[in-house]
Length: 244
Image (tube, rainbow, N blue to C red):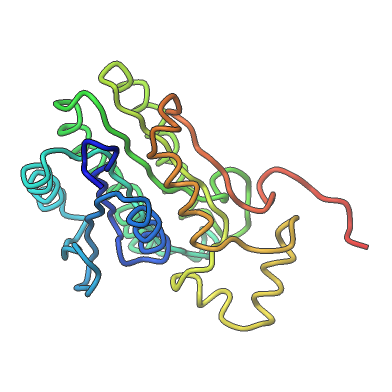
């Protein structure tokens, strides 16, 4: 597909992760050009090695992509971690690392991407929160703080950059079937417990989150900005009737 016929240039931070790789597959199948980076080397097509906690390196990478490709239509920040401990058992060093990996990297990416996209007069940025930032879930204090910051950042950035034609959104999934979640759902018993916590009786797959992400950076969502879309089997918003 020729770029003039609807092809988008999409950059994914966390390209090799469960959601990042599923999203790259869907976008490429739809004819888009997908590039991205991850912390470690990968055999995936158009994957660079980059530490997103280094803002100068991240900005340099996005500048290089825009120079080579001519533009960046969408940036997707599929970078994050899982951390389940109550506040009193969370060492300060762990909390600082969670904020750095989840919130700080998102801000660095937002800063670099919007600087470039403003010159284009168009563009879309997408970030990832968590259902734990939507409702109180035990032992999620640190990760909820980091991801809740992302949601607030998205709303503010959407207001700032809307006059420049930029859209900023987020997705808040609950526990998702990815390699990152294996320590939590690695056994059948643990998986069943996690499923029962969700009103719809299942946890989401990476490809389902990727489908929502692909829509949010598409032209079909051209009037959507400043939103956090929750995909969590109902865990953050409903208390279901007991199962028969």
